[in-house]
Amino acid sequence: MKKTAFSLALCLLCALFPMSAAAAGNDPSIAYASNQNIIIDGRAVAFQTYMLLEANGYGTNYVKLRDVAHVLNGTRAQFSVGYTAQTGITITTGAPYQDVGSEMDTPFAGADKSFTRQNTPLVINGAPVPLDTITLLDDSGGGYNYIKLRDLGQALGFFVDWDAAAGSVVLDTTRGHDAAPADTPSAMAGAMLDALNRDIGSQGSARLADVDGDGVKELIVLSSYAARLYDWNGGQLSGREIGILAGGQIGWWLCRDISTGAFVIEYNTEGAAYDNSTFFYPNRETHISRFHSDDGSSDFQICYVDGREVTQAEYLAVKGQNRRLELLISDMDQGDLGLLTETRSELECLLAGKTARDISDEALLQIARRLEAQVSTMDINIMNGWPTECDYSDVILWDTDIECYRVIGYTSAADVLRAAEEIWYRYVSRSDPTFEQVFAPHILERYVARNGALYRHDMGMGDGGIVNVVDQLISRTADRATFSGYSTYDGEERLSTFQVFLVYEDGVWKYRSIN
Image 1 (cartoon, rainbow, N blue to C red):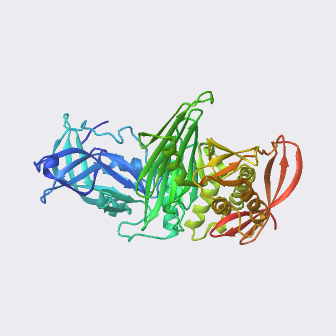
Image 2: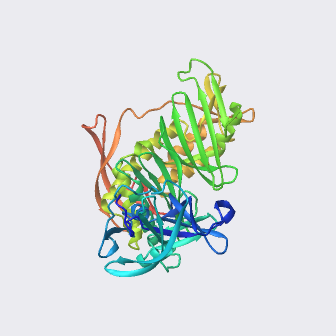
Image 3: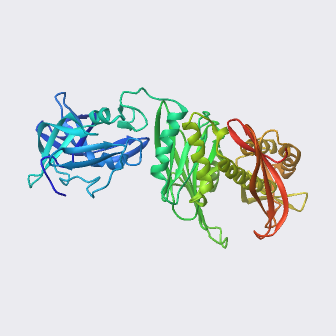
């Protein structure tokens, strides 16, 4: 990169953070190399930074302008950076930034540097703006200018703050520099859309779901390599990684901790010879693993909880404590434009001051297709013992010839019925009579209590290869929608036709099998 006294590598002051001089050095004429995470619209971004010693004995971090322009590209606060000998450094707000290859890399290879102070005006949208600036020189005499991030936020109109609890600088592109925290559905949707656009990539997907029970939906974004959970709290969006796309079958489940009633997210990876889960509790994580014979030819099995080898009973106790309620997203959803259409449409409605009731017809059709598939799967699963799992090494005979297997985490058929009902009505309207009339009696007949434990009889029912397809929205009102569909065996021949209905209930669209 060509270096000048007013290089394009202009850098920004991020924020004060409580680091003592002894932690980095005590020479006020030296800029000390360091690293700093900045929370940008809920996502932590690691910057290579330089720290200056202030008069109060604490340090102030600085980071390159082009680094900030690079990470803000595509957000509402994006800006371009230019340089001419006549005008110096220029910034144009709202314009896309073009990378030059030096982004997110220090020009000084991480070495501490001396610096000088000067007052260098930037030309922002054609007008000069004087900002307090320091300059660092490299070994060839090329200068790199640094400036305060708060000053830049004020000049360009984005919000900068210090989160003492997280120990991080917070930058919010959806709010003005002097804005109070905007804790509104519209502000939340704007921040989530920015996070979605930044993370999604070409093969990703996303889902909105209330995963903590507070009545506000969180955003789960599945990129090409990992899933991130975004939570809106107090006018700010925070995000964290909740699992990567490794091998095997991968899914993220919403669970309920039966001891506390709290919601838990389970990240599960499963293959022929292993089953791994990480449970994300509100303030901690628990990891369990089971390795076993991949073909059932032996009783080989090793179980772990948080890296400690345990008995099968201990493993099953942890697994059974977290009851699955809903599959949030899975590796099979990568590239699912239907799910992505749902999510974008709902966020765009919230951004415009509307609700999920107002999503587009195309998004509503995608919801009907997803719910039809999920409810059809639940129909078969209930007949096969869902939502319970069994320890197949513990078996009894019922009525002398029916094998039954010990159920994990349940003590009575009534307990199973309550859990199944909670899961069913996450998808299906409570005005639909199917569960009460069909499935509740079946569930109660499938279980028997013996020796202080609950056992289940497996029936092994299937769907016969028949698939239901929802193909068209027929009509729609404010809180009801009617769709047409057909059943097919080979994907081509239509065996029969049907109608399915959606009802807007509890802030979401739910399935109803009859009008």
